[in-house]
Image 1 (cartoon, helix red, strand yellow):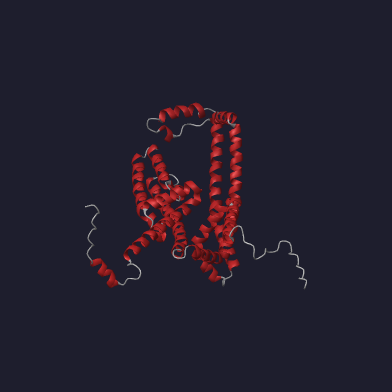
Image 2: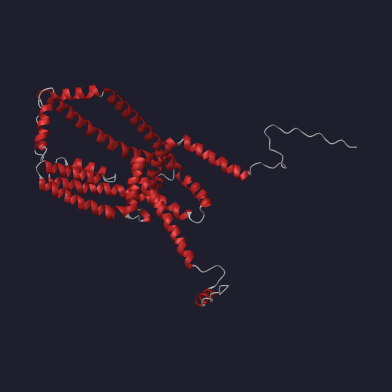
Length: 400
């Protein structure tokens, strides 16, 4: 009787025998494993979400210019990404340096005024005295607190002595927020460099996965996102510049002090929903309170009409992009985005609203097409014959 050959021992961590059945189906196990990995990645890297979204927004908005830059450097993506990042750094740093210099100069003037007023006392400003109904009361309070030498020092000592702990905690919180903002900007710049250099490869991979998930809709939906982001960024920028120039000219005509500075601040505030009306209203109130009642009312009327026209006609056309969002979804996207994600939500909110509107219109179009198309397997003559056929008589109910 022949002796069977001895079986070789199975190595450790080798594959299981092919005849054994798995407790969990391999496809289900792979899906659950993928879900767990995605959840773990979202938990560990959720702090990088805002910098990455900001980098994607900037990359989408500047991609047409970046393609021209790539053509100028013979398709060298690393060099092109470096040059594009240098341009963006210049675009960010130069305004920040100018604003910081202006702020330092203003703070220096305020500090000099405070020292001088604390030394000899500060008279009540004329525009406070000229305020209707409350001017006299505010004048008395001002003279009682700041009208004598050393008054400002007494107020500062009183406030700081009773709230020193709160001031210390606020200073620590401000320092921590500034450090977090610096780190977020650094991560955004790093992500932006790789978005420029490897953006086309990433888009190709996302398109491949999207076609697998949504094979019939992905091509249309995927084109909405970059077009909407680009149109939103460009539209908000054009609107902010236009409102700053128009209202700045109105400030100059109305005789407002520092109209250029106030126009720039109004343009910056125009990026935020309700920012431009707030700025214009405050300037109008200042004019009316300082004695120029007619100029204040005229500025308020002109600004109200101009902002109404912009918000009702120009903003929805520019911000909606290819979706052409109506006024209400545009407004909800801007306000909801700012409330949820801060300044970045100005651009992310309208994109999400555009996607929702695009999906809704896609569903409506499919329903309409389904109702119009004839049943499968029937030609046009058969459909027409069935449409002209009389309805069959109703069946008699049993027992009648």
